[in-house]
Image (tube, rainbow, N blue to C red; front, top):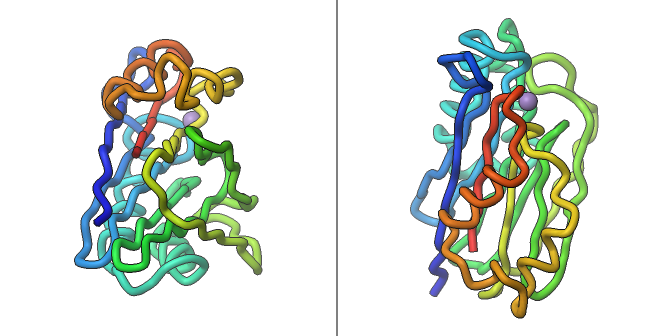
Amino acid sequence: MVEIDIGHVLRPKEGENSCGDSILVHCFPQIIRLAVIDGLGHGPEAAQAAAEAKKTLTSTETLGGQELISQCHNKLMGTRGAVVGVVDLDKSQNMWRGISLGNISIAFYGQEHYLPATNGGIVGYNLPTRLVSWSRPYSPGQILIMHSDGIHNLAGLGELLAPTGGLGKAQAQHLAESIAVGYGKIEDDLAILVAK
Ligand SMILES: [Mn+2]
């Protein structure tokens, strides 16, 4: 049985009340959908684009990959647009499936380091004609980290998160908070999601 521990941190840039970044954790019957969204720019209009993307991502379990992103793209037209990273954990098949556009980082740490392929483009603004998605078997011990560009490059994190590293055994929420404090940019909205 798949059991994952999820933690996340979301906060606006300094001096802003509404956050243009957004985080989604949604349990469908078969899949757990995780997403990090960065609405373009900052403030209420960015937040509105992110909210629209979040609404679409929770509206369908059966659509995935390119079709799901295309649906988001249609719904976000007329908004600021957003960059989006979506990862589904399929509990019946023990598989991760993901797709991402733009500046959303997705990486697996733990026993092995894996960086899924990503795509260019902005949801609601310009979508590549062909989008690359990926899949990967689920196994205990994996640490999935997804974040917006409100987090600096996580160089060196792999060693800390290795089974023998200092943070490898930490709870997901503790990891998300430690990374937000250590690597977050105060001049940008910030979203980080950790699943392990
Ligand atoms: Mn940003």
